[in-house]
Length: 142
Image 1 (cartoon, one colour):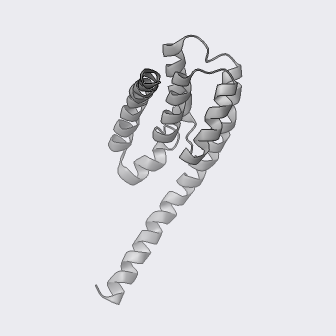
Image 2 (image 1 turned 60 degrees about the vertical axis):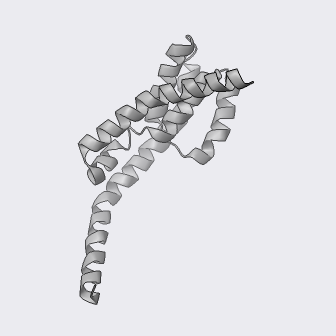
């Protein structure tokens, strides 16, 4: 690869990042607003209606409030103190980390709408399955 080709590739990459940067900033701002809404939604009574309904509610809330895995331990403790069962907490954390309906426009801009939609829909469904199996296995092992 010549120096000219390398510079052309670098310019093309920077232009692509420049086009994505405003979308990424908007997604980060929106996600940070939604993370602050989670405790309010819990206190409004959206959760607390039985295990399956709570898991679906936690999956939906977690899908909207995208977060980082490193914070999930602290958040799980707070959700436990708020009175949520382990099924709901696990579903919320799995969806919170793997599903991203809010950042989907940024993902679609980079990878295409079809991929972004399928990835998020399957992650939403698997968050329920994985959390249910995880908690059931933990109960069985203890």
